[in-house]
Amino acid sequence: MKKLKYIKLIIAMIIFQVFSFTAFAQMMAPEDPGGEPVGEDPIGGGAPLSGGTLILTILGAFYGGKKIYDRNRKANAL
Image 1: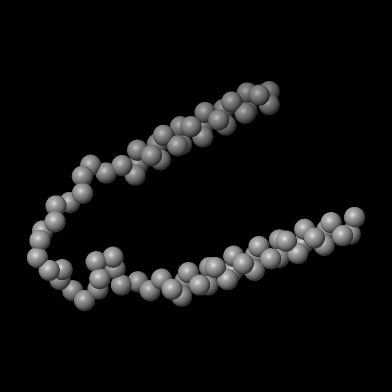
Image 2 (image 1 turned 90 degrees about the horizontal axis):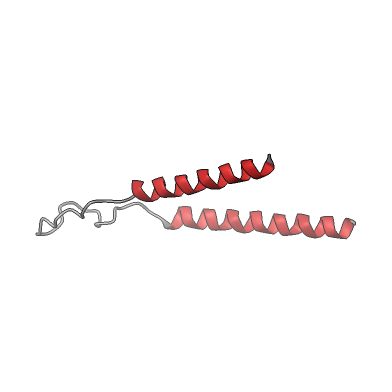
């Protein structure tokens, strides 16, 4: 019974991968209209990335440190 569940899980994962690859496919890039871009923002957008990236990096470091601390504490308790 477990083998059948495992096979179904593998098949579901393969089907998910196939559909997700086709979902991101695009036909062609739009043609460049030429000329200068209109507006003040750069072409990639004007969203500030430095603040959010820094916060996520710090949170990830704290999370990883806590995991290591808990693992070492558990190993020393045994």
